[in-house]
Structures are given as C-alpha cells and as structure tokens.
Image (cartoon, rainbow, N blue to C red; front, side):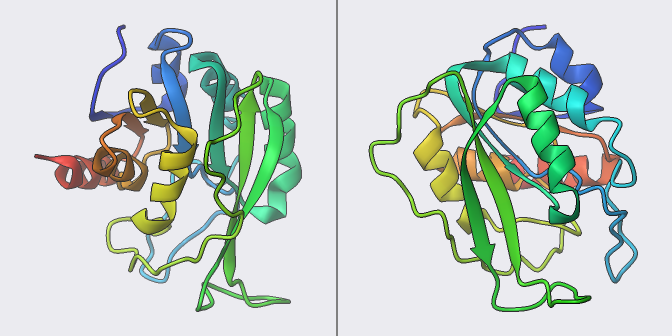
Length: 211
C-alpha cells in the first residue's frame, strides 16, 4: 500500500509495517512496550507488554521503512535494556545517543524510587548531525495518563521531532498509544503516521488528532 498521511491505523505493526514502502518515513519516535507486564493503578495494561516476540521483527521493519541516513528515538524499559539493544543492532541501527527524562515524582518503586524515563537515539546509515543539538536530559512534565497508562507528555516529544525530523518529512510511531508523538508532529507541521493495536487507545488517538 502507499504510505497513508496524517492518520493512525488500527492494527498490529507486524502486519501493517510490511505493507509500507521501503524508505517511506523520515523519522521514528516511539514508546514500545517495556516487557514488564505493566498494570496501572486503575487496571489498564499495554498490549504485548508480557513478551518480547514482537521486538526484533518490529525494529527490523522500522529500519526497513526509514529513509537512508535518518534517525529513530525509542523509549525502552531498563530491566530489559539488553533485549532492546540487541533488537536495535540486529535491525541495523547504531546507537548514537541516550536521553534521560527526570521526573519530579515517583512512578513506582522497589530498591529505588522510579523517577526518570529513558530512550535511545538510533541512526540508520550516517545522518547529518542536527543544526542545533538538543540536550540529552529533558525535564518531564506529568501528562496525567488520562488517555493511556504510560502516556508521554507532548512537551518532551516536541524537541525530539523538531531536532531529528525534516520539516517536509514523515514521522512514524508504530506503537502510537494515545497519539502523543503524532500530536507533536502535527503541532510542528510534520506529516505523521501512527499504528496502534488496542482499539480503545486507537480511538483516543483518533479523537485527539481530529481537525
């Protein structure tokens, strides 16, 4: 199929990504399941957060659909950082940066209180460095998680989209959730495409992105 513009598709990215043309998107910014079986206080869950079977094939397809010499940013769960790094590298990505997002609150705890999120900056080929490099520590603002149990605040996504995507390019999020990445792209005038497996989160994202 040709690459849809400015929409979020309902389905499994392992089914839909192979239908997209090679080199058809300019930048990927995504928050995949962390492989931790997460359940929020109100009982909401994230599809496929209980297994890693999807991880390597998804990033292989992400690599395929990305333009040559381009970037991806992937949030990840630190308990399984080794699995994420293995999948990125097997797909063909180079890890060229690491981002930390400190929180002013704890989102959980164990041996430590969990007060930050993290993401890898990945390169396909040899992309040019951004004209204005952003810092690798970006303050987190609480989203309220009203639309999704692991909802990312748009404020932390905007500088990533601006720095690593071209104004005329396409931003892809194959684990779109409630559509925060897509909303950031829309706010910056980028074309965007999302894929979301869960029907409820897909509906929330679609409402959020409606004109």
